[in-house]
Amino acid sequence: MSQDARLDEEQATLRRARVIGMNYIDTSQIKDKVLYRDILTIPELQQLRIIPLQADEHNIMFGVTTTTSQQTMTAIRQRFQDQRIAFAIISDTGYTDYMRLYNPPAAVVYQDITLNQADNAVLVDQISGLLQQVRADDMLAYLVEQAHRLNASDIHIETQTNDVRIRFRIDGVLHPIATLFMDKYRVLISAIASAGNVSTSASDAQQGHIAQKVTMADGTKVDVNVRLETVPTINGMDVVMRLFNMNADMYTLERLGLSPTERAAVDEIITKPSGLVMVVGPTGSGKTTTLYSMLNTLNVDSRKIITIEDPVEYQFPGITQISVTTKPGAEQTNFADKLRAVLRLDPDIVMVGEIRDMDTAKTALQSALTGHLVLTTFHASSAAAALTRLGDIIGQNPLFVSAIRLVMAQRLIRKLDDTLKQPYAPSEAEWRTINTVLDTLPADTPRPNLEGLQLYKPGSSPENPYGFKGQIAIREQFTMTDQLRALLEKPETALSAQNIEAAAAASGMHTMLQDGVLKVIAGETTFDEIFRVVG
Figure 1 (tube, rainbow, N blue to C red):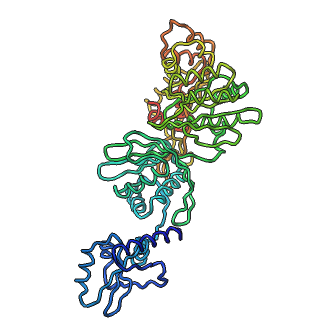
Figure 2 (figure 1 turned 120 degrees about the vertical axis):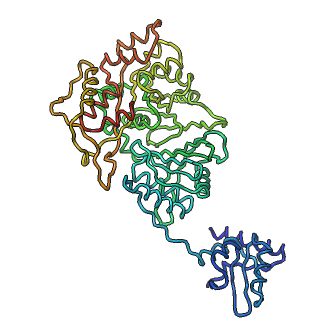
């Protein structure tokens, strides 16, 4: 507390003491505070909100707060009938300062979270006990700092009947980290809501953003930069915090793991930046990272680049970035309105965070037809499904076919830790899967050598009990070939994801399943991972 705030509190306490006709003592002026431990126990000091300030053989002066009841003071006089008892009002902060002397808080040791299958329950108990000891800001900063250290993408705070569960999503899989009692959860959720400008009593889902620097009790400085998604449940408000990685080095095409064919298509677009590029997939599939990596490569002095995002996740020098507000019930400007305004600024390249409605879709396509490069994300299960969904939104329009340059769908899977993975011979069922999938590859795709093939399963170590390290993307993408254009421009065609995918495959596209199986053969991941993500 600042000196000015403490002075204001003491003056307010003095005024209150005068109103009720009691003595007042400013405990901030008592330099050498004497503790009288044999008068009252620490639980009594806490329960009664009373502090012995001065005492001798015949006299005791107690400090009480404005919330100490008259019944308490009467009971104290009856208990100490052999002494002359006096009371004086002290401030709440004065009382708290004395209690810290009588009952100093235990030093908090912030242990690093280490995931281990063998003693995960022990870990949860340890971290739960730690979180119960610390203040709300430190809880949030500690969780964010540990999530970054473990390369987690999200922090999930989930209310249950009797407690609250905290889990980290690491390499796409959720891991229990701690449980909180409801009273501590309410303290944490209030701090999150205040920092993220959301309401704890809202009846609808909310979005927010926290960007602040926190100095924890042990002096650790933490940058808390997260996107909030909240939803009310029957037990309270659940929160998911998406962590933003502020390292610009990660946003490069080299880190995306594109195959030579995929990279050639992207390089062609970067060389001639025009048309519409869509990256599709569910939440958490790395769509924004892919678009940011393209933007970072396109970002040169000769081009004007503008982004429209909800929210702005990473700030790039040299790029104009616009945040769109989409809080329910708030007066807001949607993506389409912002996009029309942005086009008047004569950009070369525009990134639209997400196509959500017909107006945004049509405006983005019209922009792509007039010489702009438009990058955007879209929620769809596959690259082919993205075109059918887009057709459902805007109707059958041959113009939109001319606008599309590239459609890329992706998912993230866990990558085997190369230092731990264990070789084994494929089973008969795995051989059947491999041969079935390889038989569906485009004719011009080189087949991997299967002679003496070994697959790999995850190993384990104390440092990495799960055997995976990081994530890689499995993708499918296509450009608008003549075969696809002919299919999409036929007005009598009943578009379906199946016939679009067949036409794309005939033009050389690998499906995500094919890409995944090739990565299994290459020893980068496992069949279980592919089936977990792709199905």
